[in-house]
Image (tube, rainbow, N blue to C red; front, side):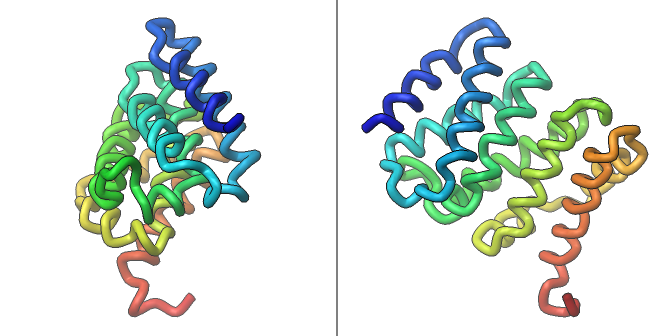
Length: 181
């Protein structure tokens, strides 16, 4: 299967010591996933497990650019990720790990960096996904919310917008039963 071969090749590059290689592998994966998001049902489970493993490893990377593109990788496949998880792992525990990594990333990322926007966009996707909302809410600690407030002062409009949409998703998921949309 051609798709699986590409993912495995990118995975090998993604474990390089050089951060540029890791970034490049995740960028390739991001574009591949964005282009093929309409065919997620046909992707084998083992290939999806590689995607999730690469993204999780990228979210833990020390380089902001690598973390940014890792977050962008999961956005097109957040629906499948939240429902199925990967390779026998519990989808809820994996979503919880991602939520924690993203909240931690917001502490260390510069508001002018695209990584901040990417982290906020993935958080927003998780909070607005019905299958992940319970897990995301369970990992929502009130002391984490101010991490988004700092992004409202960013000089980058896309970062401010991502933070606002994330905040809105948190509020809507928290009060979904009591709010009119």
